[in-house]
Amino acid sequence: MQNQEREVNKQMAAPNIGLIYCSVFEDEIALLANEATHIKARQCFDIGLHDRPKTMRENLQAAVEEMDARTDIEAIVLVYGLCGLGTAGLRAGRHKLVITRAHDCMTLFMGSKERYAQTQAASPDTYFYTPGWNRARRVPGPERLAALREELAKKYDADTVDFLVEAERELWAKHGRAVYLELGTASAATEAEYAKHCAEGLGWSFEHISGDRALMHDLLWGNWDEARFQTIEPGHCLQHSVDAAIFKSKTT
Image 1 (tube, rainbow, N blue to C red):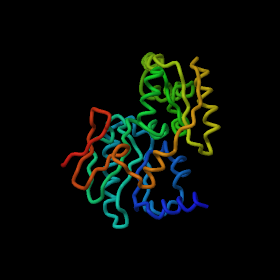
Image 2: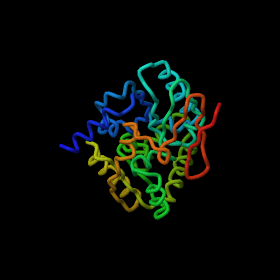
Image 3: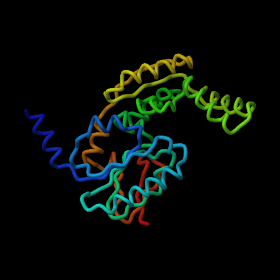
Image 4: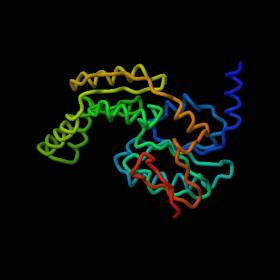
């Protein structure tokens, strides 16, 4: 009963927000905040924007400006990390922006940037898989190579295709360990099997790790401390910080 009361109090205290997120987090957001009444607006963007950071920034900025017209929210939450500088340069207009101090989405699965950094330092040859990245088939594995070959064949001759596919293989060669991260979503078990399948095909070791929901939960429910989250007040711009903070805010 006490746990239920605490959860109700958390929900009552949550600020009204607009949510802008990457499709890689669809299942996790559904799990943690599917019926959250404080989330007044949601906009999801395709995972493929990671290939084009400039386009990502333009799309996210347009979404921010669209949500700025709303009068029923107190903040706009970005379920992204730095993402290849794709979020650097975003400007807060009418509403403040909130983003996790994270280089990429693996921090949100790990539960902290510190745990993620420790894991990387202990095994620098690790490649991380998650349910969303698996579903998009954008992870190293046989299907990714086949899809890449098919895509390139529409643009280049056979020799060029072979060269580019081999270049992709060489990028993967620095890895030797696959780690699958999940937060207990419905698809977690199925996608774990796919990650294991990829690892076996590549000759990599495989490990299945349960992540920590706390960081994403707190992002979605408004528990925004400065150590874990960057807040960009109206009239300020999100910038990359080349230290442990990852982000900083600057007046425009």
